[in-house]
Length: 144
Image (cartoon, rainbow, N blue to C red; front, side):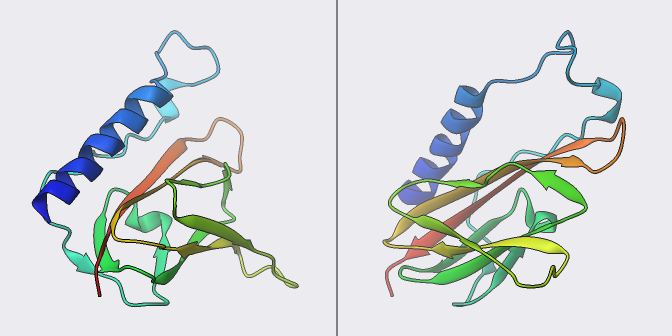
């Protein structure tokens, strides 16, 4: 289990490095309004998720565990403009289309096999000169 978790933390670090940082000299980002998300500490996932559980942007930076073949839901508030969330393969994110606006965008997270699942998105608040938010969670899927 610790080897799988370590691999997930390494994968998360590689993804973060590949995405690159934004330097203060980048004119498209105001350092005074940027939000820094604390990195995930190395250790065991502490929060269990049952099939059908919901993850929101308030969960960013958290590590969870569940069983393989779980279906979870990601909900991101419409108070932010979000990039399309990403997930590592072979897992899937499926957008949910609502008839009436519930105040958030949602995706089903399909966990297809044991291992670490990384879900990420970037958000900007819906206002002028507002802060940005980087969303990231790691879900460790275990054999049933």
